[in-house]
Image (tube, rainbow, N blue to C red; front, side, top):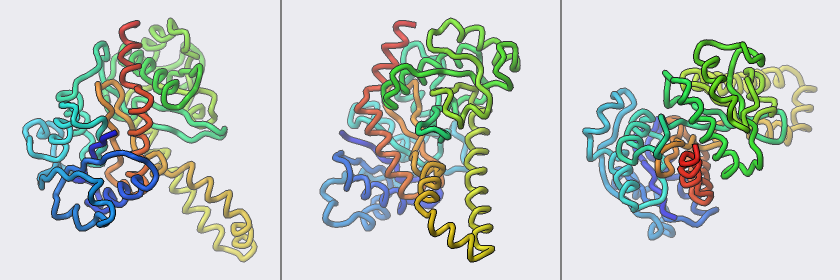
Length: 326
C-alpha cells in the first residue's frame, strides 16, 4: 500500500506528522509518500528507515487563514500535488492535517465524486457507554444540506459501518430533537420521509443516542454535525481537567485515583480524539482522510491506520456499488 501524507499546514508544523508516520511504520507495512518541504522533513526521519520513505518536495501549502477556493489555483501546494498523485493512481490513499476545506474541495474537484453521490461527507467515531462506537456523518463537509443529501449520508454510513467497523446489520438514525416521527425542523422532517423507505433506517435519534450505543450510524447536516463534534471534544477535555483538579484536593482522592489509574487511562483513550486519527471523506472515488489541524503524533499514526483499514476494506468500491443499486 502506498499512502500519501501531506506534511504541511498542520498547527504544529512538520514534526508531529513525521513522528506519527515513523511510529506507524513500526506497526504496519506500507510505503509512505510524504509531500512537503524536504529541508524540514529529512532531518526528522531516522536514518535506519529513510529508505522506506519517499519525499515529494514542495515548500508551498495552503495556510489555515486562506480561503479554500484558492487551493485549485495553487498547483504547487502540498495538498494539490498530493491529490494529483492520488488521482493518477500513484498511491492508494491520502492523509492531511492541513486546511480541511482545501482538502475537501480538491478531493471533490480532482479525485471526483462516486457516481450518484450528491455530496461527500466527513464521518467520525463517537465513543459510547457500550463497548462500541457510533458513526456520525456529516461532521462538517456540508453546512447546508438538502434531504436527499442525508439519504446519501445514510447509505455511505451504512456501507462504512459494515465494511470498516465490521457491524453486520448497522442501525441508522437521523439526528433530531426528539425520537417521535413528527419531531425536527423542516430538513429533518423531509429527510425522515425519504429515509423511512430504507430497510436499515431505525428512526429519529436524540443527542444522547450519540453516546449510548443504541444506533450504529447517525446522520445529520454538516453544520450540526461539526458543532456536535467540537462540543463533545470540549466536554471531554473539560471533564478531564475537572477530574484532575478534584483529585488534587485531598490525599484520599489522590490515593483513589492511583488505585484506579487503569480505569482513568482507558477513559482518556476512549474520549481522546487523537485515538481516532482522522475522519474519512466518504463519497469520493479514492480514500481521503482529514485530520485535525491540531493533530499530534498519535493522531497522525491513527490516521494512517484509518487509511489502511479503508483501503483494505475497499469501502470506496462498496459505496460505489451501493449507489448503482440505489
